[in-house]
Length: 146
Image (cartoon, rainbow, N blue to C red; front, side, top):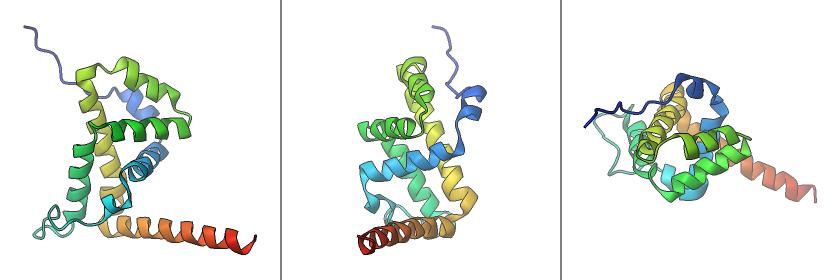
């Protein structure tokens, strides 16, 4: 039996994915799985690592869901909203079935870097809260202008 190399996303694909895609994918995941998914879970956060606890929780959740139909739905929606048909086609036609988990795992890791590690945990929580406040303010402004 030949040893097959473990899948890694080609650099030309990784470099072609815009940073906004990770935001869109994360947003679609929240749409599919619900906002409660982002709330700190006392069973998943490690109290001895307060700076990484929330990041660890999000990481575990992303790794748990990336092999689900919910993940596929979120991925496809993010690709469509950003007109990234090429990425959707790449995942569906170029990534072999048994490599999809590795491909999705790399996307998950990139989301973690993009949101949790680059922005630091407390800022990420405030990012989500700010988005909700802006969304509510837009709804209120829309109602006031009616």
